[in-house]
Length: 506
Ligand SMILES: [Zn+2]
Image (cartoon, rainbow, N blue to C red; front, side, top):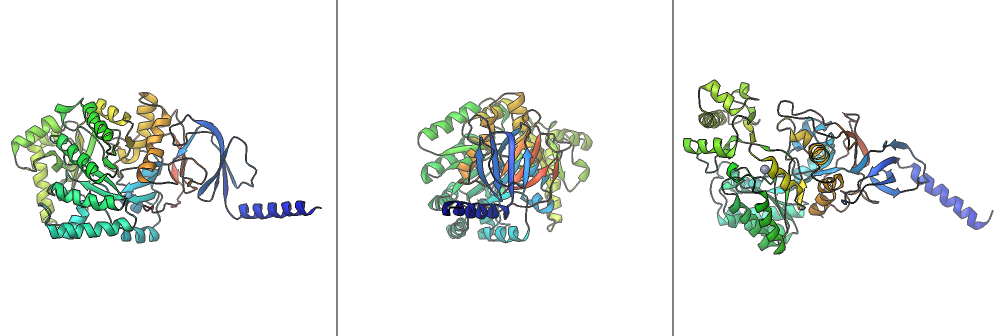
């Protein structure tokens, strides 16, 4: 035996020993939709531990621990939920079905102005493994609560309070927060000045962060709200994103193209603005957002809301702690029960909830929530097809069906049934495009060296099954889901594994 042969043998032994020490999975017989919006292609994929180590047309020469026959289905990167409220559910339900059953492998939390401090999140994730990866924004409302006190938010912040918020925010960004989120339509931030938001946005930009916003109005004053976020993008030059873009004022239905023209014009002027969207014509929120002027006892405002801002006969209470029997009923139905018009019922529901809150200051559960039918199908489609829109769920488990079905609904209803876009494009909006926005360099694509966050799905059957009456129904057509190389979901069931990690901004 020559020296070179001996060396080769030695290397082979070394290599196979190295491979043996780590688990290798081969996935074959799949069409790869790699998260780049390029046409699907056939290849073998090799996973070692948490990462993808091989993609190729030839079967790799390796000692394999597990072989997965994809049966000709699609292998895609795991979906990134760019606006999620699932974190509480992942804590309560270790199976994590709300995310993994729709193919989500990473959730981005800290949305609409509400977040946990990065230190708490880090500690919590170390002690309590979860099924999905998690990344978080820092929320303006949470900063306001620290600086102003949680019961004193319905006003402008003082200069001193803004300074305090700025320094906390800077620390959070250094600890890996993705950026700043705002929920300007909600009362905890509604009364903040544009200057306050801009000041915080500037701190975020100085740390190379991102800005995402549930804008100040999604209905009557939407134009002005869009102007506000464009201005933030102009002044800070950082990427800014409109959260769950929608037109919730019936009088403006059909004008999605006008909104997009405004956003595209801003992009042409160098402003990096984009949006995320969920695929439904109804939202889920507090009843209070139906009063843009926050004048909850004004009958004229209530009447305007029932005519313009939502359809009371198709909008259902998803939660109502003061009178649990109202849950699942529409505002119109509750009005009939109470002998009130829909507008009067809307006002009563808010008043009763407020009294309940005051009488039960230590009540920790949600008091009220409504699924508000408020958008046109056509606008949803126009927004979804916008090249700068990425897909989100805005969901949690047990409320709006988007918590279990947003991503599969896009693939089943909008891609397969309505042919709104090719599946490669839709998957790009759920993976590679989102990863680019968040700066996730090793996720969101099927590529060598990337984490093996993957979903095996059947393009012929994938679709959501959750609806208002059965919001936890599992989607069909999601065959298998991997998070960091570990199978977390298979045959409509959790595998009981929790390989999710906290992703920090680099
Ligand atoms: Zn929101």
